[in-house]
Length: 98
Image 1: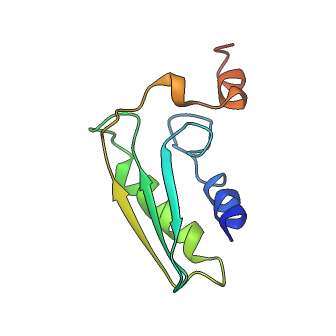
Image 2: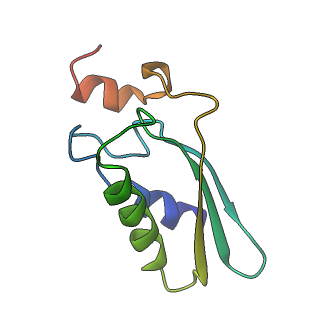
């Protein structure tokens, strides 16, 4: 199921950046419990991100759309803080940073 969750996360974009939240490196952990509940530990590019509510809701809704998932909790953290080093090579290419 973790593969399907990652696929769902790759459909969530920060509206200000044309890269999905997974490849941006905003997802720190995906924890699937025995009862099929999911805990996502993630961050944002900045603590004062104006699109925070939209991004968090999109993450939750995309994962909840997976049939096997019973519930989704998001643990929003800012330590370690996000940096460009967390981006995938694909994201770096998309943004012209490579």
